[in-house]
Length: 253
Image (cartoon, rainbow, N blue to C red; front, side, top):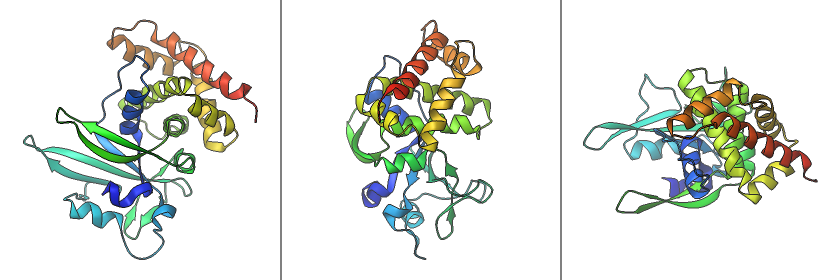
């Protein structure tokens, strides 16, 4: 399905975070994730006609949109343990959350903060290898700076209120910020686009919410790193946040 949709279906969210933190290691293990989020580029797929395209591809492969699920969520039972494999479909902002954007006829979604910037940066082709048999899957992956902007902008807007979601989003955002510091292309892209609304919101959140190691966001990161046996996680998070914000502000252009 991903091969057929090409650049029109971009891997984002927690799965993209995990891929990038393995590809650009920062000496902190990537957080596990339970689903796959896809950013749908309606322009790339030319989804402006009355002919559905994404839903049929999912349904042909055994995915279902149960009445109890949100419209954007498709699931499939897999494996001997009958686990649910979850795929969420998201679109770029443009309409309110009360009136979510329609990906195609009969398939609505939610507007994902930062996705417009991420799609504008164009995805990068990646080969993701799974398991001991090293089976590979080709994906279109959101760029590193786009992954950071999406997570930080999501935190900035406060759309997810469940404590576990706030925790995981905050952790992902600061780990991606640290990875951006180690990637010249990602840092340069953030600096170059720092006046765009979604990038500006992401950097403002980073600056305001990690001013000291004792903010609630820094303490979330500290608690996570404590679990991994790493002390002073709040100070580490505040230092990385300050460095990335300073690098973006000081760049020319």
